[in-house]
Image 1: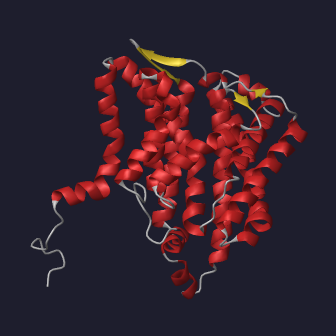
Image 2: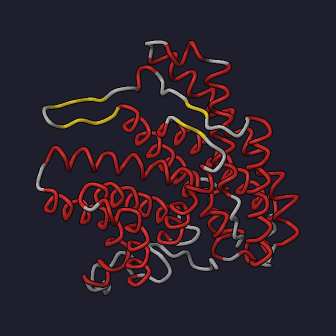
Image 3: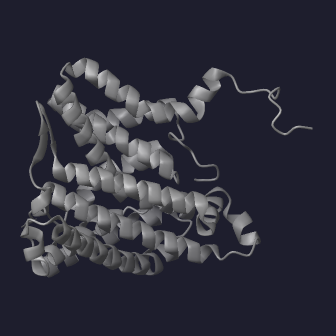
Length: 342
């Protein structure tokens, strides 16, 4: 029997559209609807690319949290601590170690400074993630209410430690010299740093997806998200995988904190908690444990925040809440629910 028999029944077109394809089309549909509402192509392009950049920075911060939710079934409300700490570590490296590289009119020197700041932030937040998981999270596995309370407590403790180490004041930080300013093409303008952030976010998504789809450790993680007991029965030490995912998620949050700090050109201790609302919205509408869903959700959040900020500034703050409500009415488990996730 031919396994590729064309006579095999196929799902109806509407079923396929409402299955995997439609969530991918959602950002495109949103962008086209915004084009009709805005009515100006240069303005729409500027807002769309700004939304893409914002979405990619949120994706970097949220991608680790969605895996922690999906794989470990841990409600980590302390994730914002890694975002804030990563931003402060990155700023310390940029201002204290590489100030000349940051101000130099050289792409190479700017990238060296950025790479050093991101690496330091990822290492420090990854190490903190390991301590956080072993000391705070591990004793409360399986107890969601305790997880919420104790991780919120961890977030507050880290914020206070930031005040002790760096002081209570906000710290300004300049973007690398070659990433300041904008590209202009006629009436269309786009900030260089946002383009850099968008490309970095897309690169991280592709790398993360490649690891999850094409490597053995990725296979174990995906299997663990869907059926932890099955993976343990095959002899894999799921606990070590849990810890590695938590550390990687913390490091990604630190990296995202550096990117967001440079985007705002300001870092402060509450920036992690302030960004957690958008991070949670992205994780929920994407589907717990789904990197692809997190990516699409971050795009939607970034785009709608910029479109509504231009079209109706008074409702901009609530636009992402409305987006989450509409998506959960459409797909209660998120855009790409992962079987077995809680």
